[in-house]
Each structure stands twice: as structure tokens, then as C-alpha cells.
Image (cartoon, rainbow, N blue to C red; front, top):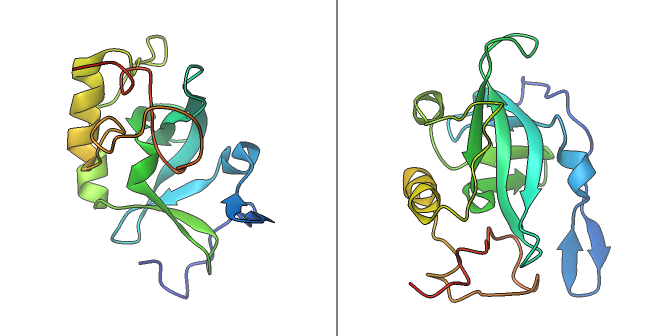
Length: 156
């Protein structure tokens, strides 16, 4: 967890209250600092990737390591691996900073696709999340947060 003496420098992650739902503007996540389960700053959100077929978050791109964008590693992380700490208004991952440091990354010129079932399964397995196919979620946005993808709606 983040100690009380750490002062994160992030935007306000206040959710908007809509009857029956809490929503967050994706633009509020851009550049947001992400913390590991053990409280370390492990990078910043670079992109939120949406699946155009289902309207769900496919994955979040985390820029980790490096300095001022140089030498950073890009990680595709399932949305379900994140939690929002409502009191500190920060994003946290459910895994340690060591595991994030050793996570498989991808090249900035060759972004991954969740339509590659083998890649998608390996990402979910690494981060300990279930694909929405395993959760029997196949369409729509009623069950967010979730990382539904077009691969999740296909038959196995």
C-alpha cells in the first residue's frame, strides 16, 4: 500500500455518480501514476485500448521504467488487474513491483492485439486475471470494469 508520507502527483480520479453506476472518464487515466501491490510507483498510463466490437476495455498500456520516455518498457495489462484506491485516488496493480519489472513488454512500433488468442491468454495468465469468456461476459458494458475483447466473444 502507499504510505501516508507519499504524495502522488496525479490527476483527480473522482468517479462520476450516475444512478446505479460509477464511471470514470478515460482521459483522467492518461499519464496517471500506477502503484504496485507493494506500494511502489511502477509507471504511468500511456493508453487505454478499447475493443470496438464489445465497447469494453481490451487492455491498458503502462509505460514503465526509463526516464522521460527514453528506455521505457510498454506493458499491456488487463483492466481487471487494476484497482482504484478511492481515498488516495490512485491506481494500483494487484501484483508486486518485481513482477511488473519482469513482465513481458512490447515494442512501441508493434502493438499487441487481444485478437491473438495465445497472446491474450498469456497476458491474462501473467496478471492473474480471467478473460471475460471465462466469466461468461460476451457483450455490452454493463459489467465494467472488465477486459472483454473480440476474442472473448468467440467460441473456443
